[in-house]
Length: 290
Image (cartoon, rainbow, N blue to C red; front, side, top):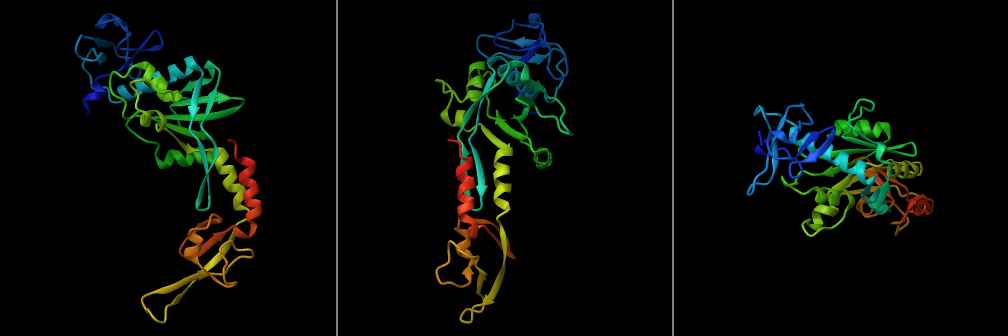
């Protein structure tokens, strides 16, 4: 076990998260572990950064991570806001920013800790105006593909906050800064601005699905190069009004690779929206909010 797991930065006192720095020293702090409810000892001295340990000396796997989850929930409940990362929609080969980073404000009683939702249990759920935002706190494990698929099936947006590089003893105001993207003297810019990402965004998915209705599938054909027998010409039938058409005939598929209206491509087909690019451009412009 990582030694960091034994050194818990936040305990639970009277139902609320408290840092080892704020709590009284020793066993008189009246704090328990947020995961196993066991009594904690506050190891606070003059040299070592303050931390809690279990009075029994038990190996509480997950106690460190649980304490960070609870502290993030406590901070969000108090401040009632979080800075969300920018939203990008993938339209073919192009990644388009449709929403710049924005501040989400909410009521303090709208934050729920590990509330079960259709087969998953997100670390936090924020509810506002009937819409849910799921939050995962990444300390030791990122969101896996199974959970991501369930979130996509529910069509509920989720962000992941990366606290994996958080150092033991990090002040509460630095965790707050990471949630709000606020720079402090002690917080590196890269940690503040790059610590959140979308696992799934419902708005970006809706734009992708709106574009999908204009997709036409074109079959890829391969013909052996008569001058280089180990090489092939790879082309597909062009769509009407093809953005890459130069010669009025079949189009080499490497041109599709650089086309913003190529929705996707595999070894057998090109999925093209180039013949409806005016409609695609309108969808993008309609949804851009920055």
